[in-house]
Length: 113
Length: 111
Image 1: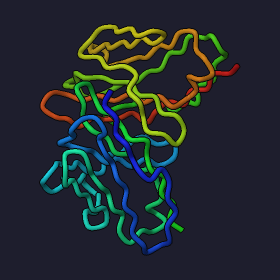
Image 2: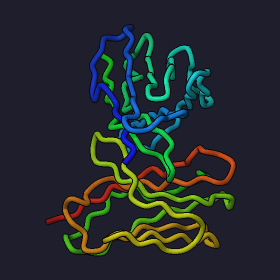
Image 3: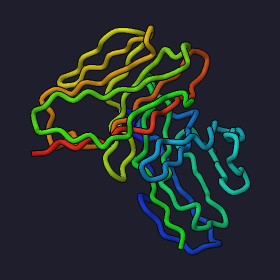
Image 4: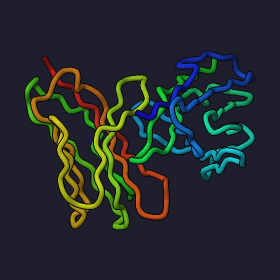
């Protein structure tokens, strides 16, 4: 089946630094990828939609300058959290649209200290 | 009112019990309904996908959609400790690829 590989699975970084999260579609081409954020015991909140070769579309309230999304190829999308702060600590998940619904990456737990 | 409402639980059941998980929604345009299972610190995995109203069965899992009541359910028969996870419903309507997720229900199946 369609698999999305997400790395790293967890990362700890210092406040003020940037962190890059990668998502790769392993056995299919993902023209569109979605980035979600999930706080403990809460649902998935869509942050942005990335389309290969074009600018990402951000949801209302999501800072595009803070959460940089790049979708340079049909199999790779990246999310960079710039100048991270403790409040950015969360679980970030990417997904790609498949024939029925979405397939999700395994998630990245970001802790900013 | 949220577009999708889901009881967060936790729901604790003994092994072998039948589990009923539910979501209600407010947007009558929703046509596509999914159930995802999410283990702790993992990404969600698709369990069931249904279109419009009706039932769909896959092994121990049955998904039901009642569009007239704006209510969907996931039934798990002969529940196992390995079913312990958070179950999220998700849905969308025509003309968009954005899915709205419920908050998820935490299920614990006790051995």
